Image (cartoon, helix red, strand yellow):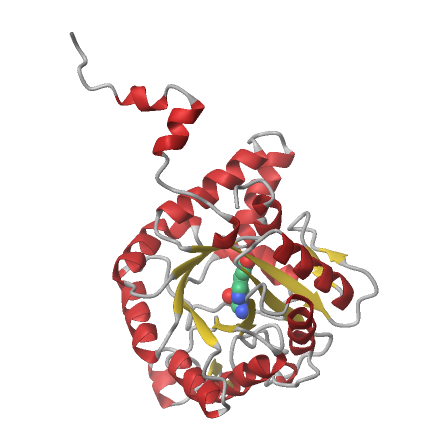
Length: 337
Ligand code: PBG
């Protein structure tokens, strides 16, 4: 008799397939990213992300309550201020939209749902960069920047991040998530939180964040002011080894969780980060991934619901304990608790 090896035996019935499934997606594995905008009367649709909105303070509360009821692992807040300036001062202002949103969401969900804050300046600066700018110094000029060019000043940015993270913790964030890819950001934020008495606030470090075209729709979502790109601080998509170096540094600086972003085009990176990390690993299915699947499904070219579950399962299989996805609440309602 040939063949003698028949892997199909374990695929014969739904119950058999359920018995041997290796990877599970549960609501607790999912984190919902949300946008809260200042001065809105009604939620504002984001055209490149059908189904996702900029929330008002009121609808944000509702989204947080739904996320908690769905049993999600967390909610991640991004702020969309109405005014921007050179240093992103709205980010450190306790009355800035992100901090107000954090306070209200925390009030709404208490400790039932971990409340996470994006700790980055790009939504708040008038130039749209993730840090503060300074004239290019001699080192920068040597490496190709023009004499009059402005560059993102790493160490000056760390001081603003430190203040921002403390403001977010004061507002009630359980987790701060530095996403700006500045060197030393995790260590600087840890010491600022500790000095302010926030020793229990965790840091989810965007350790391997790539300069990606998949962030396109997000830039609309946060009314991004950016001209140019982020290639001097976000990673080159060509590099995998560098992600391990970034992760190792973040772990040494005290990261409580690490993240790879985007997800689908970086599953190899996710796998290797998961292999070296001794803390939980997250991956972010970003706006462009959402938009791509939504657009193809709208055309009837792929099955939307199956594709959502398949991609999130793939991200989990590659090594993510936690997946940030704009479908988190919707998907959770279709999953076993
Ligand atoms: C930066 C930040 C970005 C995203 C999350 N945090 C955008 C960027 O780096 O330009 C992108 C998320 C997405 O595309 O869904 N604060």
